[in-house]
Length: 146
Image 1 (spheres, one colour):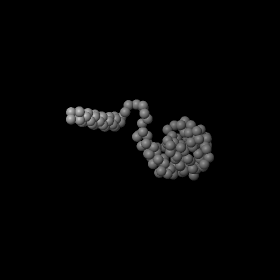
Image 2: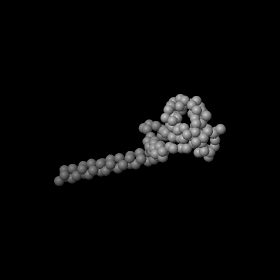
Image 3: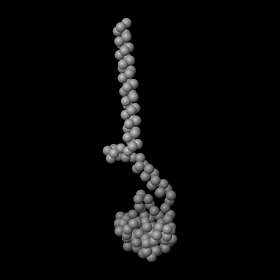
Image 4: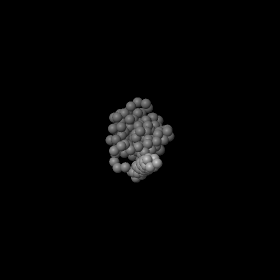
């Protein structure tokens, strides 16, 4: 079976066309060699594919006749992807959620509250500063009276 059809059958790609494009871009290797979409796959072949910033490592156990259901995928492949790859993806997602580039859209509620707290803090400093100026002026007035 062709590599693009195999990856489509075991549900790594939604369409065969997407699987073919991944082969053309060099995201898929079979036994350490870059694979064309027409490359034949046999049991015991080692497939490495890069998708969504994760490098999946698979071993072919069998060849399905057609596209199989999600529950039956494990019959045809053994997933040897290290757990660290998925943990790395989670860290990337968390860092992207936290960071929002300046000027991109409307501030979130949390951003707005942080901004309001910052402005309140500045206003408190200014008011305290004005009080101290008034106190200094009143002290000078007293000195002049004496």
